[in-house]
Amino acid sequence: MKLFSKRNRVLLHELTVTDFKLRYQQSALGYLWSILKPLMLFAVMYVVFAKFLAMGGDIPNYAVYLLAGISFWTFFAEATTQGLQAIVSRGDLIRKINFPKYIIVLSGTISALINLFFNLLVVLVFAVLTGVKFRWTILLLPFNILEMYLLALGIGLLLGSLFVKYRDVGYLWEVALQLFFYGTPIIYPITMVSATHPFMAKLLMLSPMAQVIQDIRYNLVTDYTQTLWSMWGTPLIGLIPVGIVLIVLAFGAWYFGKSSKKFAEVM
Image 1 (cartoon, helix red, strand yellow):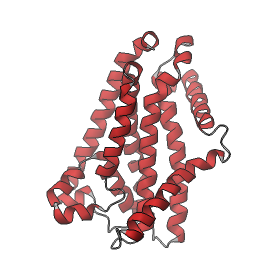
Image 2 (cartoon, rainbow, N blue to C red; image 1 turned 120 degrees about the horizontal axis):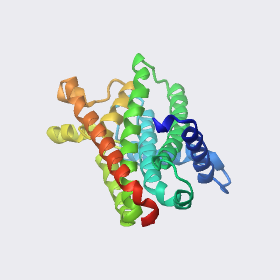
Image 3 (cartoon, one colour; image 1 turned 90 degrees about the vertical axis):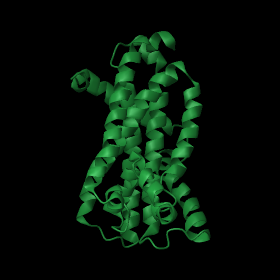
């Protein structure tokens, strides 16, 4: 595959490193912002929803539960946004050098993935300090991360292609992220929905983001967490969100490949 040629590997490495460095260039705290952003959001959410509104009181280690959800959502939002902006931000490079354009999107999403690993270290340290008892299910985290990354990559490829021609896509995606954030059980437990609208909660869990975040919480924080398969009563139902991820990735890759031939002309 072309991706694994030495030239493309070197280019991917350089673009990823450059993306990561430029993101925090000329900021006083530099790379610390990759950790501080989700931590500050967590602090606000925890005070408002856990302390003032008393959410999550029945969930063991709710603070880690909430931090994990915010950290992984931050990655998804960052990776898709990076993918959306990737091609337009590298317009000069595309006009000068002939190379597979998807490498640009890959570099942006991998840069977001690096941030996720920093945040995950913070989550793990926080989990240890608050007394979370790790189980063997923590070994399943790489598969959860892979599923989320493939979803973000597929969306990033699609959005990056559309953004070249339609700049309104950027504004629409900002709104969509807000809708998805509140439509995903991140700041509220899914039990709050299932208590009053059980079938709606089941439908909500068919979303790949809801499914993977709940699986991460189950595997990392507490087995009290309701997951897709526990709500539907069968592990086979888990094939639906995985299928959605694969469809999104395949369609995003197809549309990107179709559109990439005209990137230089359109920009």
